[in-house]
View 1 (cartoon, rainbow, N blue to C red):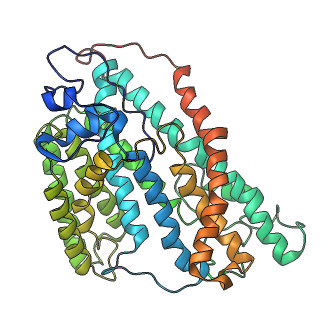
View 2: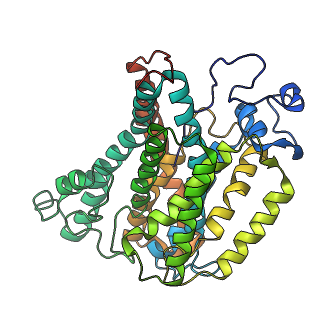
Amino acid sequence: MFRVNSVLPFKTPRRLGSFGYRRHPVTRNAPMNQPGPSNPSLHIGDTLILRQRANSLNFLRLALALLVIFSHTFPIGGFGNERILGNQTLGDISVDGFFAISGFLICGSAMRHTSRFGLGRGLTKYFWDRVLRIFPAFWICLIVTATVFGAIGWWSTHHGLSGYWSAPKGPLHYIFSDSYMRMNDYTVSGTPVNVPYLQAWDGSLWTLSWEFLCYIGVAVLAALGLLGRRRFVVGIAVLIWLAEAIVFFDSSLFPSAQYALRFGSIFVVGALVYLYRDRIPDSRGLAGALVVVAALGMVVGHPLSHVSDWISGPALVYPVLWLGAHLPFRKVGATNDLSYGVYIYAFPVGQLLALGHFQRHGYLVFALATIAGTLPLAAASWWGVERWALRAREWITFRPGNASTDS
């Protein structure tokens, strides 16, 4: 859902752009340090890819992570239920935005790796990059939650740590049972307690497994030689969307697959924007129209359905990517991307504040205090874990190969 080093193109024939289509003359001559205005004669690929160092996708990811904090403040601080339209919350919309960006970037990453290194080596590097980006920081977050946040929660109740490490479903159980990213347990030794939201120390981590499953789905399509077949991927998107619509009207169907349909539909649409990057226009009007469609989709949201964004989720993909192409915040997160750390640490920070009854100061103060407490942890995660994990991608050397012969 997060930073992808998918930006530097490899060498291609002079007549073609780096991603296999002719460079638009306006884009080729445009200053690379300026986002550029909306221009229907350009395509979304021109502004998001050929001006890749001038996009604001990293800023958007950070903004979405911060919006999740404002959403989670409602349950963590006991400020009531948050609903924008239908069954949608600000957190729902933000997570959908993460999957939209990831669908676009991850599809491009898989295609470039297999094109440059061949199928076998390309997919190996693809998974190596994805694992290093998401797992090390996740594992450290589990350890910090179990050994610091959980311990503080236990101390606040028992006035000591005696029994914490040996309690049922204790710290080691939490770390190892959740280590492969499927969240089986959200509490540690029975904590947190004496807070408005008792169900979890870190209620944000559950989306990461769905994100990684989407990565696997892209790899499967690439392995079968289907990822570059745009019409086939369109068919997959339509089938997922139809299944999501059916589940929306009957929420008792496929209860275990509802989140897969929700996130899968958004991710695939993001991938399609990449695949059709040479045909989809760079249009402010189209982005605005789809925002209206998304708003209407929220209005008809079903309160009992996990796929209540079956219209709004896919509709928001293009507007999110369009904003990434045109917002003038390209420097935010370009070098140091804190968005992942903000996302994974904000929830336990909020729980710690709730444990100290900080919610008595009101919603806005609680949310801002959560952000203030989260940013140092996010910075530590980036400089202490994530940046080093990204450098580890060079530990294994992948030589360019023939995509048609390397298996």
